[in-house]
Length: 413
Image (cartoon, rainbow, N blue to C red; front, top):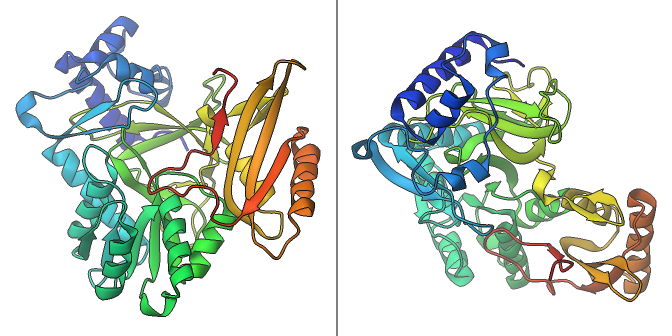
C-alpha cells in the first residue's frame, strides 16, 4: 500500500516545516538535498530515522516549533542509553486523545463503561494516554496507575470496573490474584485493552479465560504519540492503524527495502500531522506485516498483524537467530506449561561453547522431567538448538507491573 496523494501532501508540508524550524532533522535534510516530496519515489528516497538519532538530538533537538507552543513532554525509559524526549503541542495532545478514543470505540467501549487504568503515569506515555482517550470518549476513568494490587482489586470490585487497561504482564498478575482469591464472581470486567509488550497466545488465552473478558491489542510507541495509534477490532484480524494521522511501511530490517503488503518485516512510521516532534520514516524495530485486503468489519484503515517481536530483541545462540516469540510458540505447544519463562545465555569457557538455559513454569498435574524433555526436544527439532531446561512450579518466576524482561544474556558480563 504505497503512500497516497493526500498523505504525500502532508509529508511535503511536514518537510517544509522541519526545514523552517532549524531543528536536528532540518540539517539532515539540507545535507541530503531534500526540499520536499511530490511522488512516492521521492518519499522512498528520504533517509530512515531511528532512536539513535533522537538520542543524538537530546534533549529537544527534534523540536520543530517554538517553546511557547509546547505544552508537554514525554520520554522513553532510557534503559539502553540517553532517554528520548518528545515534545507535544496542544494539537498533538488533542490528536492523540482523538486516536485513543477511536481505539476504545473500535473495541466496543462506550461512555457507559468504567475504565480502570493501571499503566504508569509521569514521563511515560502510557497512563495519561489511556486516560485522555477515556475522557475524550466520555467514559469514567479510574486512574489507578501501576502496582498496589490490593487497592486495584478493591477498586475493581467496589467501582464495578468494566474495562481493564494494562500491560500483558500486569493483566496476568491480576488474573492470577483474582483466581487465587476466588474473586471472579465479584468482578464485572468485560474487556481488556492490553499494550506495551508482545504476548503469547497461551498468556492471552489464560487472561481472557480467568477474567472472562474480550482482549484487544493496542499499539503505539513513545516516539509516535504513545499507545493508541491502532487497535484490533472485534473481528480480530489485525490492528487497524490510523492512516489519517500516520503512514506505515514495512521494510526488510537488513536492507531497508520496502516490502509489499503481506510480507513480514520492520514497521516504519511517518507522522503526517504531528507538530512538536514530527518524524518521517521512523524505524520502530517492531516486526509485523501489513495484512492485505479489507477487514470484515468494514473499516478501511490498514491493518498490522500481531507484533511478532522486535528486530533488536533477536538473540543468537550457536549461530541460530532466535526471537522470544519463537520461544513462546514452543512453550504454548506443551501441556501444563504457563506463558511465563526465563532464558539465560552464557558462555562455557572450558568448552568454548555457548549454553542456553530455559526456565519455564508448569502446573502440578504434569511430570516436570517429562515436560522439560519435551521442551528440549521441541527446541532441538524446530530451532536446531538444544537448551538445558528447568521446570518450576506456577507463580515461581517474577511478575511485573510493567514490561517483563525474559532474556538475560550473560556472555558480555
